[in-house]
Amino acid sequence: MNNLLTVIIRINLSLTLLSLPYFLSAGDSKKETVTLEVLATAYNSVPEQTDDTPFEAAWGDILDPKVKSIAVSSDLLDMGLTKNTRVEIEGLPGEYLVLDKMNKRWEKKIDIYMGTDIQQAKKWGIKKVTIRWVATP
Image (cartoon, rainbow, N blue to C red):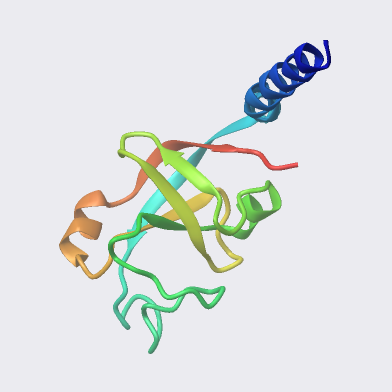
């Protein structure tokens, strides 16, 4: 009888542990996705567009042209689009990380990082796009 009880307890414990990831991820589904239309431009790591440390972002991160990243206007920071937030940009594949911030004079604006490819940034130009991110509490 003792062995049967031990087996039942182990099975019960195993089932509980197996369902734990489901319950933990179920809380994630309740997080709000924020959607917003913004003006999007592009920028490069060149002194003419930044300063004498063109690969250094405003928070001190070193930008890597292989990493999809954006700079955001300060009003978007106030809306929860903070450092390291993952962002989807309408019309572009994948996710972009918020790794830089823009001058306070800009509002509802993102700047898409395009490494040192100035022609690609010029080709992008200025567009209104919809962005999405998951709000953090």
